[in-house]
Image 1 (cartoon, rainbow, N blue to C red):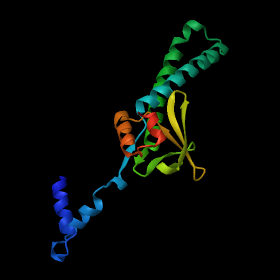
Image 2 (tube, rainbow, N blue to C red):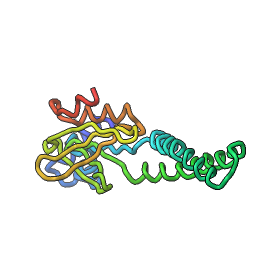
Image 3 (cartoon, rainbow, N blue to C red):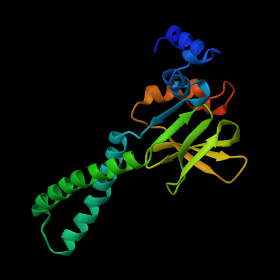
Image 4 (cartoon, one colour):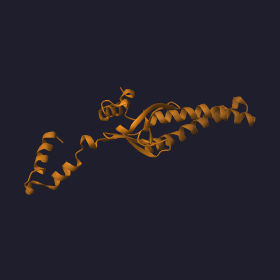
Length: 187
């Protein structure tokens, strides 16, 4: 909606003449986002999660499969078929697993704070003023920021590999307070 149209609608809505106050004006004023209502939600990147899980499945699965085949007495020359089937199974299984993780763990950046998840997957909101400690953390190559609240025992994990990384960075820098320490991780 154009700003001049909204101003004229807002003027009509604030008018003392009841005949000019329409349901549309009330709807426009209630649903128009302001700086205090901004909320942008991001999901973790499917490709980053999928590649991370797949790499670990192959790196850990191949030696385990080799040991199992050796214990069964299968000659090393005949292990190519089982290895290819194992890699195919890893490709098939890791795709849906990565999709579930992307779908179930969105995070939001708001003008009031960050809405992310705890280590156990419980949704946590921490306001900008309550973030006392920010610790970078990397788990099997996936980068996170651990946000500890100063007012209670809440901890939220903000993933640093969202689907729209540039939009994520831009939104965070736009909504975070100007002097907030989280900006140093995204500048």
